[in-house]
Length: 73
Image 1 (cartoon, rainbow, N blue to C red):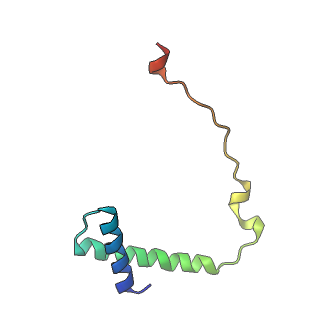
Image 2 (cartoon, helix red, strand yellow):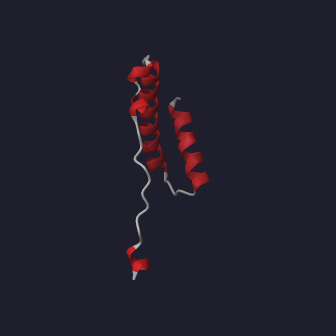
Image 3 (cartoon, one colour):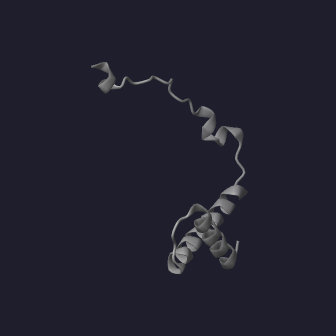
């Protein structure tokens, strides 16, 4: 993604979401977007074995609803 593409994407996204953004802010966001895309590209190149993935050991806690104290009166 080059600078022009990143800026066009940021401007189109802001317009679609209704986020007011002047040209200077859009340019700053585009720089951060390009940096993030470059970091993601580096991470995509790293080969991971299944045991390297932390998602396999993730175990969410059981859902326990909490009582609304206002309704207990």
